[in-house]
Image 1 (tube, helix red, strand yellow):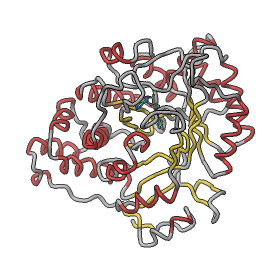
Image 2 (cartoon, rainbow, N blue to C red; image 1 turned 30 degrees about the vertical axis):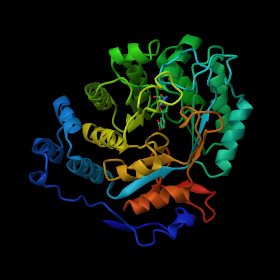
Image 3 (cartoon, rainbow, N blue to C red; image 1 turned 60 degrees about the vertical axis):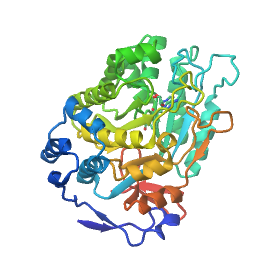
Image 4 (cartoon, rainbow, N blue to C red; image 1 turned 90 degrees about the vertical axis):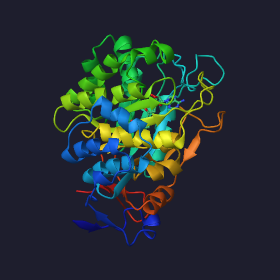
Length: 408
Ligand code: V47
């Protein structure tokens, strides 16, 4: 079925796409025409809806036939989303960079009193969220370091304060690592912590802190952090409580390609455990940015490695609805290309992002895309831009773009 793109969805950009229509069709794929014969049996599995094995995953890494890889990932992407590409209007709030941990890949963490350490008050958080809401944001994404002294009540009060002031704003907050930290400072179980956060206004959880589910990589790069089983237990519990969550993988540092595939398979298994209608919404492969971190000597990912990681994530995780390119890390240009390599979501307008800073240094955290910019690159890639809320429902806007509601 074809649907004419709604006018008024984002008025400033609609003039650029009056001719575009949504198309749920899936292009035919003929594995017999693939240049790399090793991909043909894998494509047959994709066509048959079968899960790919770890060996299949490695064959995807090894191929030089990136066009056939893209064709397979695009096939799965189009089956789920047709030619629609999602974005949202959001704002990240990193309430403090003071952290009990010191992961080697992380440029963000500081000890208290160290140069550059900061912590926001509740009022700071409310002011930033208020600016975001006034500018039309539908979501705030709130995460921080493992703050050694803030009590659990501080986080609950922040959530309650946000809900009272901005009831429409969805609060996606706290990685599994923070949730585990809250169990320690509150002496509550994971279930009790998540229940209390949900009651206070937590809408969903982001996917951060997963890094790479592998003990060797864990001990080399983020020793002291929650291990894979702990991260998964937090998300499993959230799913049981009806809290939607996301998942990430941080790739391009010391892990091997086989370890990346192992991580994706663990996520796939956890997703299969989730109650119907709950579970992970999206996988966000995060491209490691070496600048400023203890691993600054590493070269980081090339464009092709990023593209393959996104496509392989799509193919290894058929039970995930969405694959998101986080343009802060993959770059806007590669994210645009990735829409034809399995990606269906470009995340949001973001504005300030403190966790990674390209080219390092203070003052470089202002990383903003306009709605017009995001829509333009989606349209140029041949897709129909659709604004979504955090739960992937369509957002419809007033003519000035400031008022919004979820389409029924
Ligand atoms: O957990 C830290 C990663 C994550 C670096 O759920 C780095 O919608 C690259 O999880 N280079 C936080 N990555 C970000 C995150 C996220 C982002 C966007 C959307 C969502 C979502 C989640 O960033 C951390 C860590 O894995 N990270 N340092 C770095 N140097």
